[in-house]
Image (cartoon, rainbow, N blue to C red; front, side, top):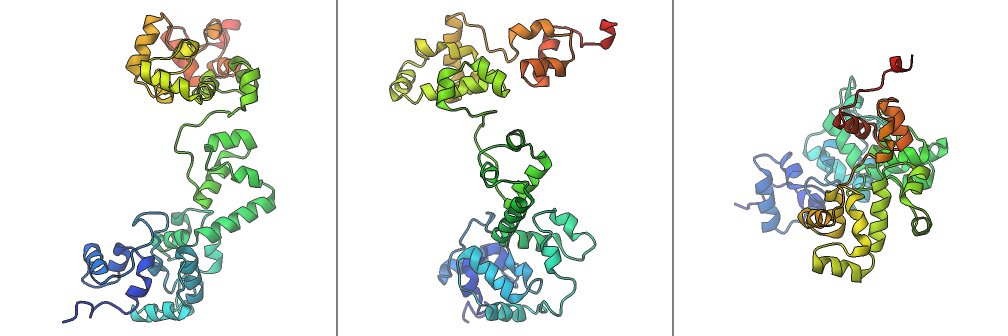
Length: 342
């Protein structure tokens, strides 16, 4: 008996747009592993994305939920294929799924407009549509949703194009500080556009080389806020652009004389990552030179502790309130009470 006898005619045509698990969900008596075996044995096209990647949209869940021609267009855009609406209709009929016009409930245009602006769970409430269907549409129509959201946000005057370009490079908090947009709006836009935040450490404020050359870390901190360590780190990164310096650090397992002042300007772990040395080597050099460990709380502001609230001290010193509270507790100093001034 032919091993492909029970495989629908359309599977080889759309195999590149569906994962093994998605195909197995509509093929009787076949698991994802068996589909993978058949895919390899009979030379079916390989799925175009990671099984759980951003493009892994199970568009089969949308059969009958949206118009066949709309579904065909979305699949073609997403996977760069040339599937026709007639093929979508044939697949739907083969699986015994009713058409969009005959179906209730379904993903009507007004419901589709909500996708990307609200969570799938909230959209599904009271509408008789499963979360799985809404998520499938969100993944498949990501490009359309992102374009519509961007155009609407720009039309409303909330988002400028250059602000949207910040999303992959800055955290939500940084974008809020830079633009004044409510953090909830920033988070919603990031989710709508499906843009992940930066995967590496970011700075409170990224300054230019000219500013680093002409301004001290203390002046930059006073000008832009944020911790001193952020500006010191940027200054160190600039110094490490000299390959000779980087090679010398790697060879000697310590910082050269003109960079030793960085040993107490940021946490040891952060410094170790920047210069590609172990914390052990850096601590040994710091102890040998008799340099005090890094203190995130500037010593010159210790006299303010207990004389003002922690938040007031944090504002003056331009550091997090948690850092002020930690330092005050470390020094066993009581919190400020307004009664002290009465």
